[in-house]
Length: 401
Image (cartoon, rainbow, N blue to C red; front, side, top):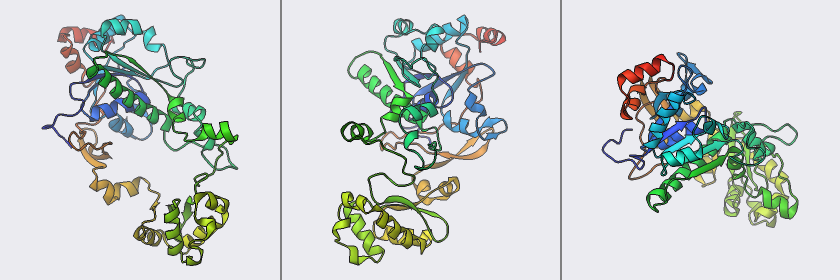
């Protein structure tokens, strides 16, 4: 997916990543895909804990190869005086710093807002944390799961007669990372187009999740409604649900607009209900939800998943199968849109990885390499900021890099 002959939108932007695991690194992954030079700082020998998370191949996480693609990895102990001086040199010539430690952590190392401002007035600093940089909870540790709980997502996820459950992925971290990307792009525009200089960006995981919670707050404020868990259905929107087919598979059906539901009635052979006042509007369908759900369930249970999808798609009724990893890899639509990409890697050989989102017509992102080995770019990065090989070797002996 190389676009070497085209200038990527973030070409010339240098980003320093002081972060571990998900939120900060996911943010910089996106920036790297669109041309930014991302230099990931890791502790010597230890590296990012993500290197050892989940499914490993020859001792390295397969997730790592995706999360850190296109990045240059520099091992550096910023907590040492010598390491601090190196990071200062790097930041002096950089555009963006992304960090996702507990508030105040990098300041303890010597990277206070005042130091960063004096060092590089044009530097954009994006802080990602559980609760934000201020407020009564700001000094608490906060992972994505805690942000999902406080942000309101966990409470409404699951079935009403069971405890709240997680969404299957670290959605809180990922959403916060996306907001960090948005903030960085806004700040770059303000700096470079409006001549506004650098600034700080404050992204809290719980706020990123909270921002997704639709009309939950005004619904409670004006109507006293607390949204509850509703399982696979979409509360207040009928019909949108998951149904089991004749062959034991699952169909997601979303026939919740007025015209689409009328078409669904015809597909199900219920022409007698077309135009019935009870089903003409969503407000009325909500009042008759139980009847509608039982009618759809009966129709679906008489057909296989493929049979359902064929007739529903032929009549422009939104429906789909629930995909797992195997379904995704073999799906022709994923392939046609370059969302499954094969790449070569020294440790993995040929491996399939996710493609790039979003898709830009003139300056599409590119995949250059997968997550590198620990310290793979030490020489390149340190020489670029003026250190000699002798200095680099001495730092290695002292455990600074």
